Length: 85
Image (cartoon, rainbow, N blue to C red):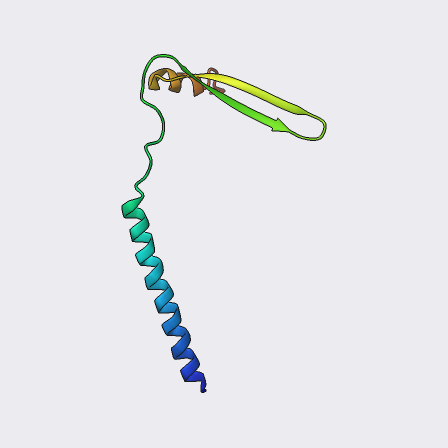
């Protein structure tokens, strides 16, 4: 087979794979919609855990995070700033 024939075969193969990827991507997007993330605003708290383990140490920390979006923003906002006037 000549070089032109191999080029034509490989181009056709790449085209078929590309079209299949596009079709599968569209199918997946249509039939598997995005999940709703987060939680509804309300009263109360979520508990966030952070764990780290190594050979010597194990560290664990938990935070109570408010469900109310305004209180949540206050929770993560810095209390002090180093602004010079």
